[in-house]
Image 1 (cartoon, helix red, strand yellow):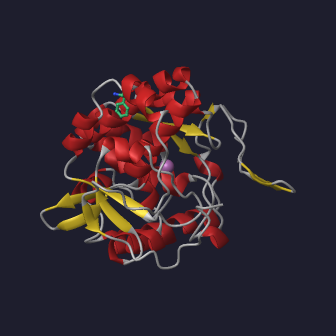
Image 2 (cartoon, protein in one colour):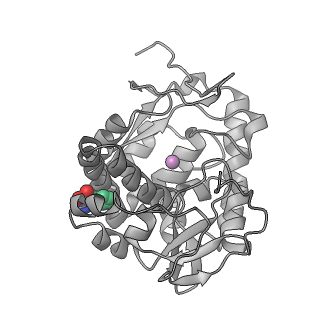
Image 3 (cartoon, protein in one colour):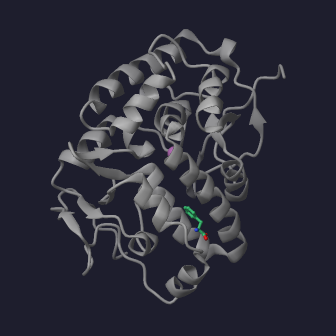
Length: 296
Ligand code: PHE
Ligand code: CO
């Protein structure tokens, strides 16, 4: 393919922020990346590798090294795919932006991880409101080399295909699980609590905040608790859930969720920052800096 793929981003309208969805898979136009884009990668790569020492879990750090990613240039999907295919039989596919749920689930169910081909602009180093190449490649791809986690993400994709057919409530419960594990998960290790969530490892501020700030709750993993918990998409999380092992995550999600979804329809959801009776509280958040919008 020699047509340049599109850079599909959200739009800001008089109704506010509107996400835009796109379905295509595209070749990575590697030769077209500009020196500025390679430089954005280099800056973020160096910065995050430094921040993540002693903060990200070993599975993340070591698997990232196995890919041979470096600050020298934006990695080529082709090169990464050789390692990924041989390792856990996953592959990266290039996409232009956010995918509709059912297409995203179908990719995961078939061990294809969608990676946005474009990278953020220099003025967006600290924050942008949607996934880009840095988040997807640096953040998600390393954990796909972990055999248990790789199977978990595929099982999630299959579960997503099913939840999509069941309806909006089931989909919301399942999406919260992805959010609080794949994107914002923490893991307890012999060395202390560490990060594995991709949304955290691709953010300098949140990598520090999630472990060191007094503000957020850190609570032991509980499947149904997570499925009932609202989340924030435009601020740091108010609650992080801590797993003991990737096997725990895998085991907890093996049962058929259909009866769980049916039960949860009857129950209220929990505000993002509220501690619940029965929580295994590792750290009770001070709530400092939270904007009180939950009651609105
Ligand atoms: N067991 C879940 C279901 O029946 C599928 C799933 C597996 C969901 C792993 C998330 C993670 O729907
Ligand atoms: Co992500």
